[in-house]
Length: 369
Ligand code: PLP
Image (cartoon, rainbow, N blue to C red; front, side):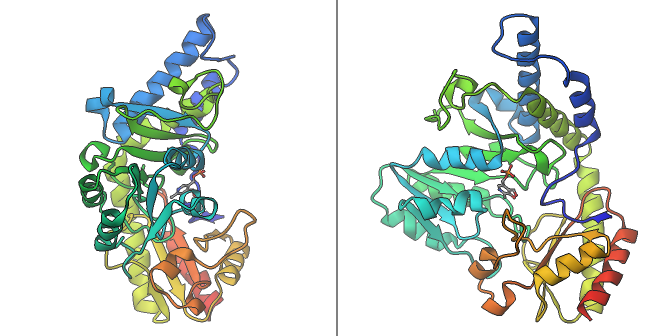
């Protein structure tokens, strides 16, 4: 198989695999007083340091807390639940772990995006200005999982700050694909997820300025400064830290590699496939992501046919049952309903080669012709 679905999940990195096999059989409960407990605690604190470096808060780690959770979804939920007594402003292109919150709570306002996929900053400012809520939260993702479009977090934070709103960013698609700098972006809260950058599934983190204290949504023994109880997933957290360390070591070179392969793909698509449109290509995007639309073709058909041909890609908007659904992201960007089921997402990794892209292109040609 050729794997071109890195935005869905990534393989576990060698350093993460090594630590899993090194400590996997040791009984590590960080709450224990004895040697094993202390070792578990030390592993967790080590991971916190690597994550701090990864997201650009290494120099001022004292101002932040890193709260480990069971996934990115849980971290996003923890965030939003803490503003249930206020008003929450989200972009119209958030991941379901943020956008579905609006289905269950009536204190969420969705802010439109421009056709480019970037949030409408004027609309955000107008919405904040009209809010009567005492507590406000702006939650806008760093980079969209379908299109790869990157949001101007610093500008968003500065608008949020003008109206006394705190700022959260779902940064799940960032690590390993761009240089993270939470200190510079000044966001109050950020979410990451292990399996998107070489860690394991089932572990994530909410990184937060420690002037804030969160009300827990999981209550118990007081782990993670009582903000997220439950015996820590030491193995997952260790792998997350190891993956963060590995990502940082090779970041510049890997970004260049992904960008070169992705640009190669897009130049071939543009020259050889006039029926294909590349989404978000006029604005800054993740270096590894291409979302394309083939007018008149169904995503599901293309994904299944490519799978049969040995290539793993995605429609970008599959739900948990694996069924392709209309892309809310494309809808928010103004695409017409006949286009919403016609997208194909190719997301490469640092190890993806141009030869693999050539195989993809030749199968893709067969499938759409
Ligand atoms: N946010 C974004 C942007 C994502 O792409 C994902 C996963 O696809 C998540 C949140 C959810 O992360 P997790 O799978 O760890 O729950």
